[in-house]
Length: 282
Image: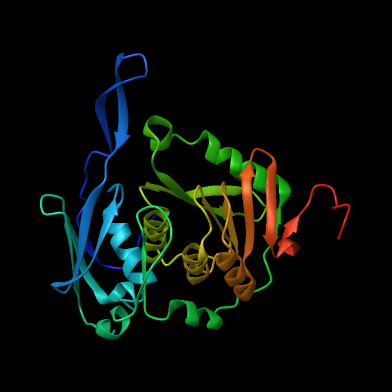
């Protein structure tokens, strides 16, 4: 996806899966694979901001999305460069200008739930009252089933090694077909969604016609980031939390849980879903 923003970015790569020797319950030696996990410390204009534990599949996008979702940078145009160095496990971000009060934002830190433990700075939850997504668009039951099947067929690190979460974003076309835009795996679902958010921000991609899918729970943090991106549909193979549901109700997000095969459960805003056969009950 082409970017209208002139940001100098490294293209740092690192092995994502590692071969290890194990012994099973019968004492047999076997070879298996496990995902990597490494620290990545973000420096914003030489100031240390946070250390993220990550698989490292899309580090520059992860950094950009993290800065976006934490409101530590107002626009991609404010960023001159993002340089990731795996020898020092660091990401150096240089800006053209900084209009954000980092001290005020980072003075209040919330450690979020889930694997890898994410963080949220400032009053993000309070600011959700300013976000209300429009009532449209709608999504058909057939498109939902096709999306779930597309995820099932996708070649993933999880199938080889397990121990990672995946997030994906799909785009709807005029014929209610869905097309995969981005698929990111990481050791924590918050890292994967930040990476997707960074890619969308870099391409100035609005979220109004997109569908977001995750293998992890839809917690408050995931709903907040979905609302920040303006995506009306959030889907998960897993479940959700009460706080995530409450925030979805306030921001008018459609939440679909337990998405597997042809099965799904709608927790909020079902009016966006077009059923193949009209539901028997209201």
